Image (cartoon, rainbow, N blue to C red):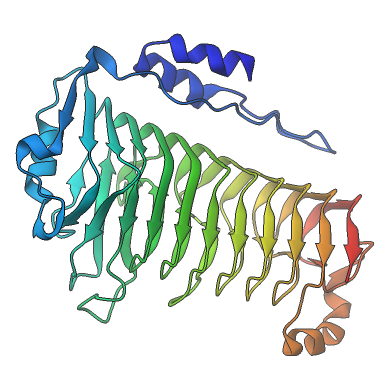
Amino acid sequence: MKGAACNLLLPRRRFLRQTALLGLPLWFSGGVVPVLRAFASPADPVAGVVINVRTKGAAGDGHRDDTAPIQASIDALPLEGGTVLVPGGTYLIDTDRPLRLREGMHLELASDAVLAAKPSTRNRFYVLLLDGVSDVEISGGRIRGERNRHQGTTGEWGYGIFVRGADRVHIHDIKVSECWGDGICIGGVSGKGIETRYSTGVTLARVACTGNRRQGLTIGPARHVSVVDSEFSDTAGTRPACGIDIEPDRPDTAQDIQIRNCVMRGNQGSGIQIYRNVSQVTLQDCTIRGNAGYGVLVAGARQALLTQNTISDNGLTGAMLRGGADDCQVQGNAFANNATRTLKRLLDGARQASLKGVGGNTRDVQVMADTQSITVSGNTFSG
């Protein structure tokens, strides 16, 4: 971490570029563990420009709509960037016209500041939108969705933070809860006849996404995403309802995703699922427990490394690999008391013919016959 600490002396934009490139993993074939990135807090914003949203008329009283004054604060930053400061209070945000962040800025919320979504009837809406921007930091406070006050009955895309085709984004020390869809979604911009614009160099640190309706965190079309020291819990309401879902829509892909020292617990679906068109994923030193679905589901992904995790008390199998998963390792994890749902235990006996030997038991690890180059080694099983 010595080198990362030195980055505090760099100009902010240069710092963000360098942290996005630190520790690119040496991807493995046969047991080489990828190098994990280092993290540090970004340096002070360029030019030291700070705009307090109260000076633009934001009330923070939980009653008046503060969307316009906060957006005016963002728009008032100089071209070289700066900080928009949100003091303590509750700021109502009209998600039909989300707060659009701009390049080279830091949205800094006080620890007792809340951006609260106003009830919406829409299928798709956001509190914060980072659309095609770069060198952006979001920190502090809380984003609170409107899932319990939502005025529509359809759709599942009401996000707290949507990172879309953005570069070098750092989100840290923030809680995102009660969203109609995902707490945070990291994705790209794609469509017929256009080249996909991926989000790249996105880091999440000390983030809590809890009590959201669809996912805690979704990672779609993206490159070089790191998630550390964070929690994704108590997702429930509409499927997949996972803590983390890494799942780009075809034909887009997600690549080089690192998740370290995180907690995925109490989700209605799986703790984490790693899906098709995903490659180079490291899941390390995480606690994955008490989810109603799988602890970890790897379905069709390539080069996934599950190592040194604690995976316990999940409703379905602790780690399930299926659907063409290729070149994956399940190494040095601690499994205990998985497949707690009675129906799952009854089905296990009927599926033996389609399982490969894994050196443990089918409650904790299952490797289906439609996979290839799967290594399961050095794990412990108890309970």
